[in-house]
Image (cartoon, rainbow, N blue to C red; front, side):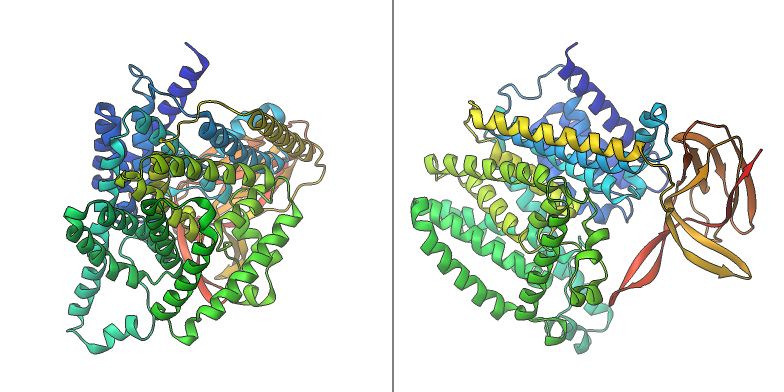
Length: 627
């Protein structure tokens, strides 16, 4: 059995195991479980149909399961597991174009290395012999139900899931280019259904008020924004860009059915207006410009003047359609805030230009680099520019491969359309994904799984049109340089971890609080402290909060020095004292990890907003009792 086949089986089996654990969890709805099984079954039968079903269903993920469950990734993992485990068939008979697969591989490696570097550098107090077990524990077994407590872990897994869908779509598309048309219709139909359901829900709520006039003023005068399937209305707007591009491409490419597609645009318009995303208006304008340019056969040399005209039209359109009151920020204030976010990103990037501050850590680190105005307004926030966020988090080592991947895919789609401009399905996905990428310049839809994963699927279909089979020498050199930089990053993280002689600060605990004379700290789902080396007992005084009954008991796992030392149920209501024995390891100190199998949220102020903080158990005394 070859290495590639072993890797295929290992990844497929791990994904299938994770999906199986999620499906038997009491917190997951039967609808989610049945849908995941159906996707896997269809994929086993016909991968192209499985991809089509996955891309269409993922945008509905948040409607199928409430947070923190990750229904979108559950569906994607079900598809990928079945696709990988079809061992009687090659993944793709026509293979992957190196011009696309190489940057995708380098980018994936950069994501993994950033996660490893951050995790290993923070593993002070874990002996090297226990490092494999420590890294394995860092990926939660119940990730699809309770997500991951660390931003670097859920960002890594979500990003790799997107890349997996991207590569799967390439392989499936290259086997049968006709599958692009079915994928286009599937994603377009799914988004249209959601677009119809959004104003329908608003009307239902209005009817519940007895059709009170004040209800509509929330949207027409107060600028309230709404999307039925996504809390992030800007991310919902980015997906609507793809749907609008699909309809517009078919309007110009299929004159005989033009009114059908114009009607589809009419159905999308109310949902787009309710989302109120200025970025989406920009993305739609870009998509329409691409469709017009392709259909008229315009050369790239004529684009600068055309692009300038598009910018003028877009600015005018956004200003005219903006319905937000002055108190919520007009276009001018939005531009000012975006420029301050760019300054924040530039400062963060300058602090670590090669490897970045760490995957998933822009939000946590943003307050260190913000302008005073942003810090007062947001406290912490993402970059409002996904490209800038990538460079800030994973530096040049990951940002350059990301741009390389995007550029190679866009170029492949452009070359295909120059030869076959009448291909309405390819034109629709090419224009839609390009418009979507433009929304990433002022937002971050790729951080939202329900918006990110469908994009990667349809972007992979665009990449599947690539005809490149020869790798230029410069590509090989760039790949080798990137691998060398990534290796240095892991080595540096290992040195930092190994040289630590003093324990770092605790994390995963909230501040001190008092309850009936008892001083405690709330634990999050993963909390870390440190104890001296030696033989003795770790003493814990814990109390679970009194809550309505849940389908499972609250369990706390304790690992000392990277090894699991105790697993115990904590009953609600009363304080309990737990003694956990530990032996000497020979390290200057030992890391102690507490992991809970459940998590809840509490509202706390963050800047001028209300945020939700995760809590699990109340921790009183945590002390080391030497023998």
